[in-house]
Each structure stands twice: as C-alpha cells, then as structure tokens.
Amino acid sequence: MKFKELNLSPELLQAIERSGFEEATPIQAQTIPLALEGRDVIGQAQTGTGKTAAFGLPMLEKIDPKNHSLQGLVISPTRELAIQTQEELYRLGRDKKIKVQAVYGGADIGRQIRGLKDHPHIVVGTPGRMLDHINRHTLKLGTVETLVLDEADEMLNMGFLEDIEKIISQVPEKRQTLLFSATMPDAIKKIGVHFMHDPEHVKIKAKEMTADLIDQYYVRAKDYEKFDVMTRLFDVQTPDLAIVFGRTKRRVDELARGLEARGYKAEGIHGDLSQQKRMSVLRSFKRGDLDILVATDVAARGLDISGVTHVYNYDIPQDPESYVHRIGRTGRAGKGGMSVTFVTPNEMGYLHVIENLTKKRMNPMRPPTEKEAFKGQLGAAVEQIENELKDNHDGLDKYTETAESLLTSYSSEELAALLLKTIAKDPSDAVPVKITPERPLPSNKRGGNRGGGKRGGGNNRGGNRKENYRKDRGGDRNKNKNYNGKKRSSNKNQGDKKRGFVIRKNEND
Image (cartoon, rainbow, N blue to C red; front, top):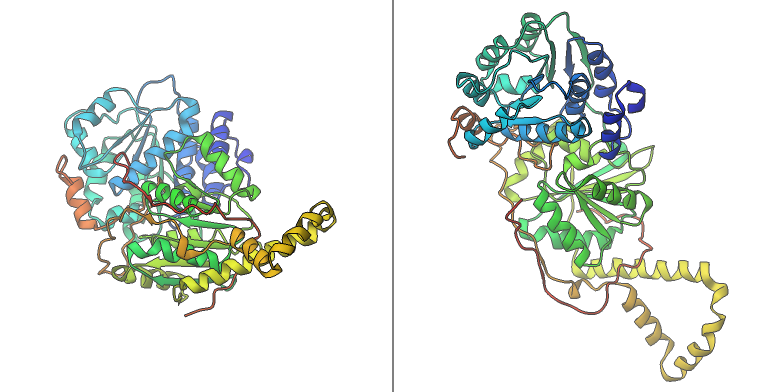
C-alpha cells in the first residue's frame, strides 16, 4: 500500500517522500488507518518493521502545531531507542513544525528541563527519567492526547511495569493509547485491559525471508582486518549492486571514504545527512551510478531498491531481527542474493542467536587472498574489454593506424597487459585505509539479547540491559565457500598513484 492511500496530510507525505519511504510496511498499512480513526491499537510486530512511523504518523497527523502544549507521549525502554525515535519523529514532523523532546537517564537533566520549557508537542523518553521529571514538576501530562508504549515487552523485561503504571496515571483517561510489542505475554494483555479502551489487535507475522534465494555466509575476522577482507571479496564476487551496513554513523562515513579511496564507486547515508543529500545518494544508487551503498539500518529502512545482489554486514547487528531486515534488501522478486556477515571472535554468540531466529545456518567463508582478489579483478577487466569491443567495434577505424604504429615498437602482449593494468586494480597496491575501531558488543551470555536498533544510525540499542536500567534509573549518573557473483563491467581504476589514506576519528559523531 502506498502512503498516499492512507489519508495523510501533504506535509507528512512530503516528509515521507523526502525520507525515501515508498510503500507502507504491513504494520504501518494496518495500524495507521485505525489510529487515524482514533482507535486504541495493540500492534504486534518484530523489530525493524517500521513501528516508529506506524505510531508516529497518526500521532503527528493529530497534533495541532499552533497549540503549544504537550499532545503526544512516547515511552521507550532504552535511551538509544528514545533518541532514535525522537530523531525520526522530528524528521517526519518537520514540515508541520512539530517540536519533539527526548528525556532519558545518563544525560544532563538541566538541558532536558530547558527543552521541556520550550513547550514541545511530543516527549519521548525512558520511564525512569520521565518519572524524575514528573516528580520535579518539569513534565506535566495533563494535556496528552496520544500515549504510545513502544517495545512494551522489553520494558516489562527490564522491570519498568510499576514506573509505566505511575506515568499512565498522570495521563488523562480520555486519550488514545497505542501499544507496540514483539511478543504478547499475559502482562502485556493486562495492560491492554486496564489502560486501553477496546483496543484493536494488529498482528504481523515475523518477517519471512526468502531463505532459499539468499546465500548466507559469515567471515570470521578481527575488527582491523575487516576492511581489507571486504574489498577483496568485492574483487572476487564483483557484485552488481551492493549495500554495506555499518553500526554507527561514524562507521558509515569512514567506510564510504575508504572505499572511494580504494577506487570503488561508493557513498554513505545515515540520519545526520541532509534530506537533499540523502535522496541524491539514493537516486544515484538506484540509477546504477554507484556500485556500493554504505548505510546505517535506519537510513536503509523502507527503501524499495531492486537489483541489489549482495549485502555485507560490516558490523554484525546486535538485534537478530535487524539481520533479517538487512539481508531482505537482496533476494527480491524471485531473484537470488548473497549476504556476508563479518564476525569478530567475541561476537560469535550473536551469530548463533541470529541463526536460531532465522532457522538457517550461515556457511563459513574463507577470506580471499590477494592473489584470488587480483584474479577476480583481471576477470572483470577482461569482461569489460570484451563488452567494449562488442559495443564499439565499428568506431575503431580511426585508431587503427596509430595502433599499428605501436605494434612496431611493442608486442601485442605488452599492449594488452598495459590495458589490463590500466583497468584492473592490483590489491597489493591498494591505498592503506584505517577504520576507527568500534566498541565491541557486550558479551552475549544469555544468547537472546535484543539490542540493536534501527531507528537512528546507532545500532547499540539494548546492550547490557541491567546497565541500561541502572543508568536510566540513576538520573544524571554518567554513563569455506566459492566466491560466486557477476562480473562488474565498470572501470574502478583510480590512477597509478599510491598514497596513504587514514580515516581520522570524528569527535562530533
């Protein structure tokens, strides 16, 4: 279903189009019409299915921007999710001039108080910090018209039920309540009975992968090895169109610049880019002007991009459902695809959690050697030359005389070798690229930690839950397969000069 069919205002449709969303996801298509009618809704869907827009768009539609009172409240389990939700609601509501404020533990409460005094239309926050503001009388909920409980099962797992009940008691009884949860335990059903008015239950089945069409592999590598291994895979697999997923915005920027320095046609997208730049990159990728799109999860969500042959998870997602969403970018419309996930030794637990969710084992892939990568480059160069000869054979007459002159001084083998050298990249001559190490994922001892997040460029949403809980409650406390794939036909050579290329850490990320 197209967003234009959902009776949304032009301002919201403009923001949706600018964000690159084309069609509503199932949870959005079923939830938004009900919510626009004013119904209470319990939405059951997995992470990575577009739940923020499912509750955000009807909430934004209802808000009167000229009324400078608090009209919407979103309760989130973690600060990372609260920040990501605030960012997405801001982007969607910007044309309506809707102000959104996030409140969460582990951050300067004074700054949050100043933000609340600026009369936001929506407040997004974690339960502990929300209660702190309520007790300080800096957050008053008497005018709230729409209440959202996001990832309610997560909040219950983290022990927030009592806090949630206290917050809801401050919200007017005459309101709309939207509750979203991946699972539906009895405690969630009780919330629906006690705090909602005849709620409509929308259940979306867990996303089914076209598993038979997607070949899934993993490469075990240390963090500092991953970039060189990945570029060798590019040379061997020669994807037609590829997406590389990074966990953070800084990671995406560094990977995009590093790939460009190595001669690949690549650009990155994440939440910090202007909408104009983001859309420009996406148009280039869809046209085929780029071979590689580097993205955070949130930037790639909702995009209907056909022709993606390979997905590379440079960072393994912390949230297993995010993995399903990522690799779903390929293997579409009955076509095959390949995903390759890079896993550091201490992240193998996350790999097993993903396999348990998808019910499919990933096959180990041996990293290609420089020799294998060079062979792949030569194969791509030969294919490009053959295609050029086939397409432009009739236009060679004017070059024949000069070519014959060269053949008097050089052998045909020498000239052909020079042509190949000009087109193909030699991995041994690759520009050195250093990617800033990311903080490792927390040890996954439980085997089912659902962190990760798709909503704002970061992918560390859950992490160590107990630590997240303590910080939130603490107010201001600181906190061996073949390499198959089609040959590229584009010229990736960027010249013969070799120079060092070091990515410097962006302190503002």
